[in-house]
Length: 363
Image (tube, rainbow, N blue to C red):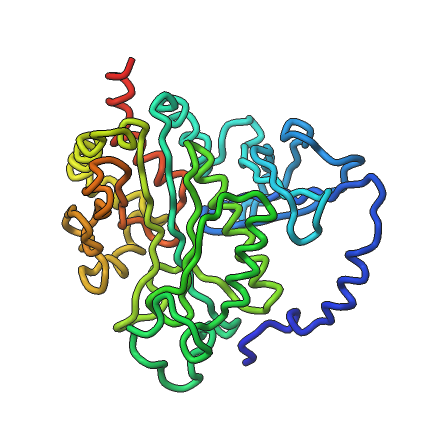
């Protein structure tokens, strides 16, 4: 089986000839939503008579939900520029609603947004570090030998070179696509396992974190589609002595970022320590089952069964970066969320645990 898809071999120069045709005042708007199982994304495109300027200009739409054939509603919530069809065309992230206009069962954005509005006076900032692994369409890690394994881990983190960094073209194109779209992407690097990469989104305030990360994931899958490879968010794509993939979350409130904020950081970590099992349940879409394969206590990962915290300790559940401990203000990092987590569910749980009481005290 070929390691890249057949569609990637199509003539891209010929494709560009058609994409460069003028489209008059018309605008192509691509609606994007999280599918019924909450794990991946779907999209479809419509024509509008003119370029929408604000999200309110974009009408609701509908679709038939996979498996159930139930008609659901798409409610636009965030608009981005389209890096594939270019201006004036748009990408629009949507919430999924039932016909009754109630949120769909796995619409975590709706409940997250309610909590974020409750803690808005704390100005919560989030940053998420999305790890992913590149695979061929045959399921084999991209760039790995067809028989056997590459050299052991240790050479690949932040690496440079054809024998160490596999798929950098995809990483660079995704980065540019995010910048063009207006996503708050702030960095990228090669990860510990070969063919594994990471990009970071943030800081984003409140509900924006989930909006920007989900759209960045969509762009990643679309860029990979053009190159004929697959990006998987599986938390442990390869068994054995190979790193898993997480989606670490960096968290701060206005009080944490101010002078002496370390006190508020330590209070938040203490609250997290009392709700370890509860957070593990929401840090992957299968209630902790995916993270069981990743949070082994080996490599730079904590144990799924025990909560731990420490300064500059990347094997802890929650890490206080060294520069934060020295400055005594800033943010903390929760390293437990899996690569395939729902950022709405993760940020919602974080706000519930660490911020609701502080918000009440503030009032």
